[in-house]
Image (cartoon, rainbow, N blue to C red; front, side):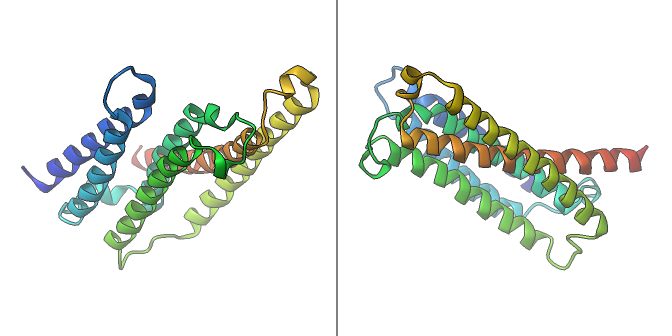
Length: 213
């Protein structure tokens, strides 16, 4: 197989690992499916990173700016972190500190694994583009506009959490532990980060489509 085909194959394996990672805790299977998904995802990301150096750069790749590549990668990984946080949010409902919560540690490790894989892949992409101009005035404008949208999205999420806490009755408030509220605030920050990456990816894509037209 060509280097590009092997790279795509490892990305498919990473996708299968993510699917098992998200569904492992919700299937009645006498096997640690979630752990297997995490293992497959990490191994596939590492091997796809290694293969990325072997994939020859094509004209199609050159047409996509490095900032757009990074933005789409960010959309995928931050989206995976948000999905994982939402699926595991119920683990933070007990009225105990996170350090004493046996269910919080595996959730944190899973989220940490996704962040580490994202950082590694982003670093390798920067090495692949060594010697090229990674940002210009257009990139700065897109980054500024995306950050403005991200701040707005974060503010909306924080206001939603504040309204929910401020207008909920006493019985409902008793269902929300402090660790759970902290988790909701973290999700608000993650949503802002995802929105930043998504807006940047869309702006890059729109400019590229306009240039090709």
